[in-house]
Length: 142
Image 1 (cartoon, rainbow, N blue to C red):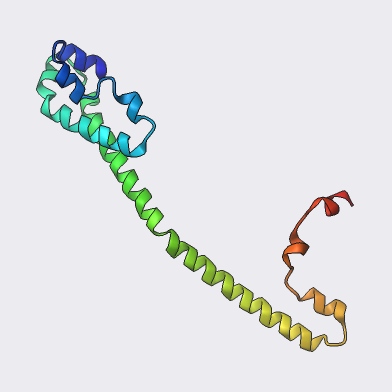
Image 2: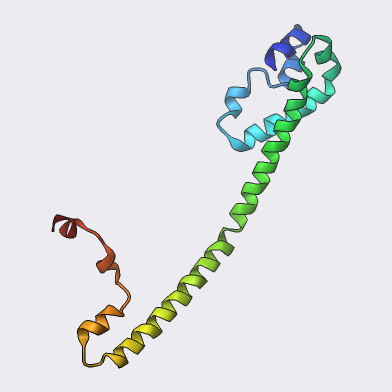
């Protein structure tokens, strides 16, 4: 885009600045700045479209700026919505895990009663503890 802007406005530094000439590197590292940059660029293309078309700027390039600006804004909105739903997702996950824990505790209690005389069989129905599922160096050496 820079080539066409410079070709259309060789002596107008202020117009070049509106198109962000020389500013792209500064905004490339920030999502918010990039979205703002593309929205500003979209507006500049709309304002100066006739002059850009006069120097044979490809229409697909001019139209692509608006498309890209819209895509970035849509992606930003989707990301913010997803961030907002994290607590809901976490709540659902905790609820499911708590239900599973309650079920295994009830199963374990039944095993305690049914296999009262056999510790080995009771152990088969106990959920694993964190130390039993930790595959540390000791178990790997065996």
